[in-house]
Image (spheres, rainbow, N blue to C red):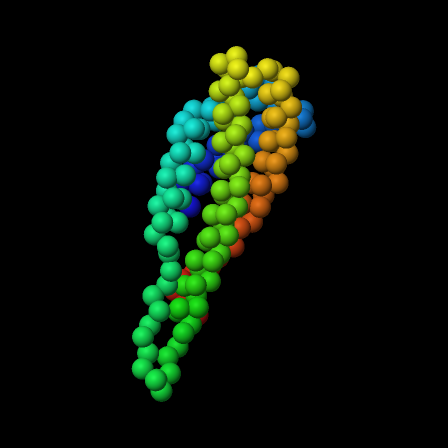
Length: 156
């Protein structure tokens, strides 16, 4: 979640600059300065998330299931809370994966544009699509993150 937050903070700033630009709240020069700032280590931060996420998935997170002899009644509230916590965090990670995938595509496109391997016209067309997707995907991520932050594994 921490690696997602770093990468998605950059993407949020990038998208916010465009939102402010189209609302005439900032100039193109100011938006460009924000965009340049968000490019710094963007690919590295996407990679850091991908690696952390792969490690998380490979760890197969689950809750310890108690071994209970027949006839013994136990409070399963802590187990239920743990399972709910994993589920809600996994949903937040799913939303992060979607949004970071879009950000990653845009980062690649920015690099291709700088290298002269992508026309400005196509780059602009792609950016408009990524920007709109970004607005929606980041909102979905923030919603899921809010739910994850409310969930506790401490038990009922």
